[in-house]
Amino acid sequence: MPRSISPWTVLVHGVPETTAIWTPLVSALEERGVTDIRLLSPPGFGAPLPSDFAAEASDYLGWLIAELDDLRAEDDRPIDIVGHDWGAGHVYGLAAERPDLVRSWVADIAGLLHPDYGWHDAAVAWQQPDVGEQMIEMMVATPVEDRIALFMGFGLPSEIAAELAPALDADMGRAILALYRSAREPELQALADRLAASDHGPGAVITATDDSYVAADLATPVAERLGVPEIRLDGQGHWWMVSDPERAADRLIAFWSGL
Image 1 (cartoon, rainbow, N blue to C red):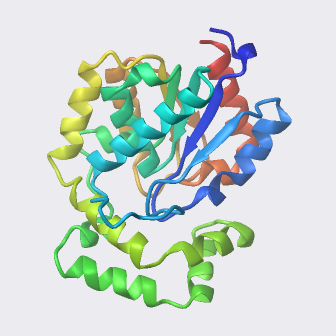
Image 2 (image 1 turned 30 degrees about the horizontal axis):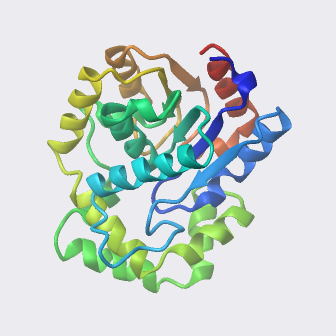
């Protein structure tokens, strides 16, 4: 199905983020003629967190399915979805359970699905009772100016850091704890097995070679197991869509053009 019929491009961000992280990539895509773009904010991450939303991985999968159903009801064009960080986790779940909803999927941090993957230190802390709550309380209590400086220390520009920092509130903290605690092992490997066994449709994994959260060398075996191409962004870190949006846009469009 050629890209000329203008599929929807749907971008799903991760934790602890908002749609602000997509701003440079959206600009680069629009400059190349990809303009029908939807940014989806998972509940608690730049979007309201309903009191009855449990915020576990299965809840976010249900949320994403509902969002795509709504988009198809609004305008039943094909959908190309891209997930980053926990947004990637949600997209992997979608590809395993409901690949019929999209024309294609792309997601980063594929090493998350490798048997040798281990959660980063912050995630391990969040997964521990009491320790996680104390850590979240400290994060929420940190002045916004200090949070901005922290995000800038991760390599994000000041204008994006300034949008991310105020969003880190008690609701986001509750969502972080519930989400990460629902993804203790063996949950990740169960997801990997479901995805590998599924008819997951056209997909690709993005590997930012300098990602400090998920080792790049774990991604290639995952891509091979899934039988999908690997889009390698050499020299880029976790926020590749910010650090090199031009190359990312070119590589995404090249993938979509080959469908």
